Image 1 (cartoon, rainbow, N blue to C red):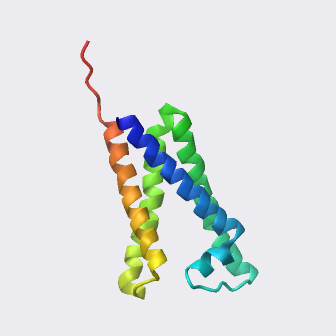
Image 2: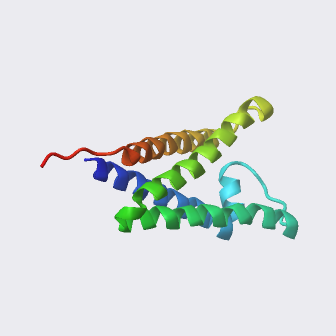
Image 3: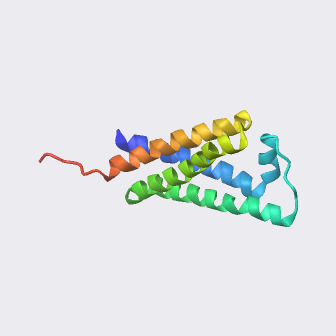
Length: 134
């Protein structure tokens, strides 16, 4: 059962990372427009916007590696948890500093925090010793 939960969490993480990372890198204006924002097309701005997208895509590769290689499952869960929780916590910090964002970004925060916490719990459980009877 634990393996199915880990595979499900890593699958959801990989899909999320590949979808969002691809949009950040290859269609940032579209992604930002979905949240009611207009990007300045200046090269410096676009560089700053696209750069974290590669990190998100890398998260997708790590999550996928954990899906296909059992020995990488726990590190993939930890990496997914770290990336998702970092984004989610960043959004929480923004609330009192910047105010309430659009509903789409509130939903993103909920997904990031929920899936990130699930990955963290699964990674913690994967690190606990298992006792087998002979």
